[in-house]
View (cartoon, rainbow over the protein chains, first blue to last red):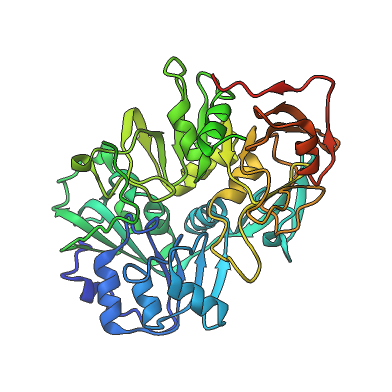
Amino acid sequence: MIQKTVKSAEEAVADISDGAKLMMGGFGLCGIPENCIQALLKKEVQALTIISNNAGVDNFGIGLFLKKRMVKKMISSYVGENAEFERQLLSGEIEVDLVPQGTLAERIRAGGAGIPAFYTPAGVGTEVAFGKETRTFDGKQFLLETGLTADFALIKAWKGDTAGNLIFKGTAMNFNPIMATAGKITIAEVEELVPAGGLNPNEIHTPGIFVQRIFQGKGYEKRIENRTVSF
Amino acid sequence: MLTKEQIAKRISKEIKHGQYINLGIGIPTLVANYIPSKIEVVLQSENGLLGIGPFPKEMDVDPDLINAGKQTISIIPGSSIFDSAQSFAMIRGGHVDLTILGAMEVSEFGDIANWKIPGKMVKGMGGAMDLVSSAKNIIVAMQHCSKDGQSKLLPTCTLPITGIRCVKKIVTDLAVLEINPSGGFVLLERAPGVTIEEIKLKTAGNLIVPNQVLEINLD
């Protein structure tokens, strides 16, 4: 088996440089690549374009990049929960491309699957449709949306093996498997790294072909945004 | 006038056995509390889950299990987990039977605005545009008027819209209304203690009043 293992987050992100286009997995703070985020913060790379469903919160996740002004542009579906982001957006310091969540997911899936564009009904008649080709199928209007790829996809899985096969857990899956397919270089951090053969092939969500680098992460905080309990 | 809980309870009567349902943030989330136990439905969360359960007990909180509002949740037996592209394939492909969501404005043709206030709120649309463009049945839960007393049921939306001609039914604190396919809000039911005149006064769009308007039943 081809070995994909790297020793650390620092080694995994060593060649990510200023101006890079990154995909980052996660929904809110659930399933985000915490170790890669810390390693990139240390590197203080600049002018990043980040494709991520959300922008973290003020003091965690991608919010930490925003604080250090490392981001030039965000491509996201929802960027609430982050006052610093809203400030940079309203003052014009940061660019944002707001994309309907299903369109964002499908653009990433398409990008990873070699599909350059597709038609979707989401956003027809709204400002999302400005400047986009529309076409009618069976009497209903659709927008042409393009596939997305990135220089690097940074994703987080539950378990992985040294061949890059991945298994996700719970709703920490979210955008991670599709982003794995759309990165020119996909870096996976996992909670538990096992030798090739240590995972049941029938249970693998992301086949190793999509993963170029893998390492066992450490010290996961898994911060909860809205702790809601019943009594 | 209905409370938020009563709006949720009234909407729960629209739910049918065997449906797959997506509930938006706010009043729609409360609907789950009023689904009769004899009716079996599956709640979809667009971040990748079919089978949302109740909020967990403190000891069972799992940071890897949240809903689209980023609240910690539990899952029910028979639930399934999937990625975001598959989640929206369910939504876009018309496999989700019912979508219940909040709104800032609804037009008399069923257009909905609920994602942006120019210059004030630019948080993003999340999954709302995908949901409203594809759902087979969309029910809006909202207050009839805004906090400053302006009608939210309008001839045309003034805020940037989320989707066109998609809302089927609206349940507010004052009334249950249906969108007439050729335009207009058809008044189906009025809240206890609320007159048709008051609803007329607080509906800026065209209100169609049939011969019989029932009082909302909250039993």
